[in-house]
Amino acid sequence: MFYEQRMMVPDSPAALRAEYEDDLATIVDQRGPEAVATDTDLDEDTLEALANGDSPNLTLEEAAAIQSLAEDEPESETMVTMALEHLLLGMSTAVLDVEALESYIDLDLEAKEIQQKIEGRAPMSFAEFVHLQYVIADGAP
Image 1 (cartoon, rainbow, N blue to C red):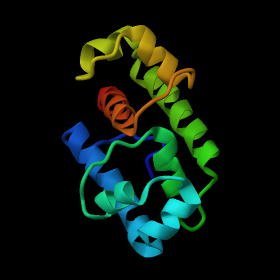
Image 2: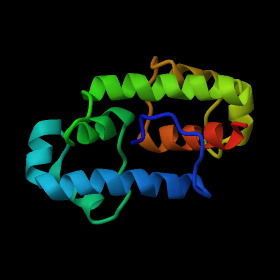
Image 3: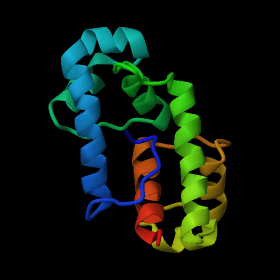
């Protein structure tokens, strides 16, 4: 699950995102796009795109809303909190600060924006989360 602490990652941020999107797509397939749309407030087209293997634009909160529909998963708010805490913990383990992250990521984000997103003070897309998680886990000893 994307909200768990990662110590190892696949070869690229895209591969990590695909892994997570496969998990989310499975939930959508099992419950049906219409039911997931009702339970998450996401539009059905986005959910169908996810189920069809596309990478729709999701926020971290939206991904958590989908994931929370799986059996034995925490509530979506808890997942978001855990995910962000694990980013911070991973930064400590890898001895990375936001300036270092800024230099390693392939996103148009400044260190201050990264810090705000990781602290939950600014919205974060799922793509941004996955990319940050990848860089942090890849830099961990």
